[in-house]
Image 1 (tube, rainbow, N blue to C red):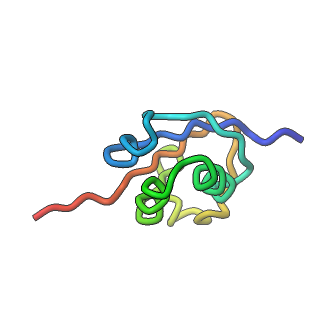
Image 2: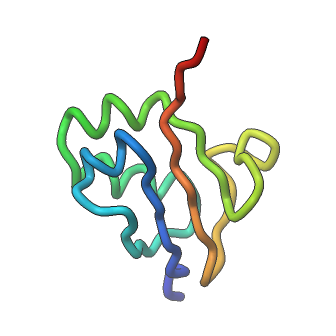
Length: 86
């Protein structure tokens, strides 16, 4: 069975490190997407990725099944680096 195709959107510093604002990826779970990203982008990207918030469509994966969250065709993962404020 084919893995679902999802859109992965990058924001702020992660977008700059990826060199694009989105990619298409085939993976069965969030963990599969993270493996793909870590193997295809550089160390600076990976360092930033480790501290990011990840949303599946509109929901933070923390409130789903974390990295084990299953994906389906047409899903969008939004990966947002933490922001500072004061």
